[in-house]
Amino acid sequence: MQTMSVQLGGSARPASKDEYGFASVNVECSVCKLLGQLAKDNNKSLEVWMSHGIEVSKVTGGFDIVTSNSNFAIAAIENSEKISLVYSFILR
Image 1 (cartoon, helix red, strand yellow):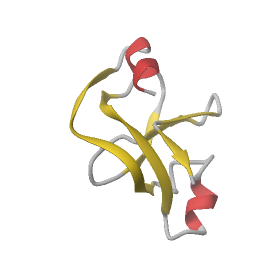
Image 2: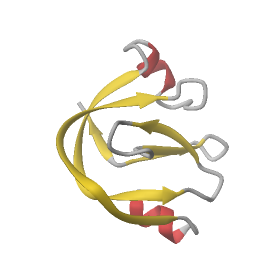
Image 3: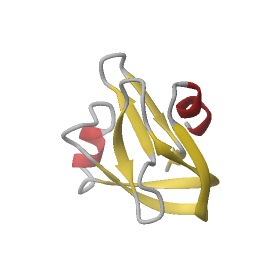
Image 4: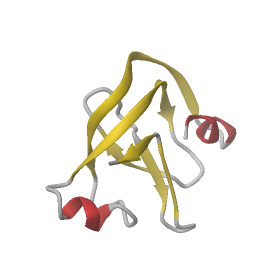
């Protein structure tokens, strides 16, 4: 996600806190069409595995921010028009 965001005109930077291991992400169900129903069934939250120390700081290319957590404001982005979901975690 970080590389793709930069290639589409966004930006990424070293995170103030690396995140490796179990994490919980909050899903914007009204925005996220691809993960929205799954998250609605789990109180708008998903358990994931994070493994990175770089964060996306600016999103472009028709993508919307669809998940976040306490360490990363942008944990997944989605372009619902192109039916593309890009995330920086592994679903558990």
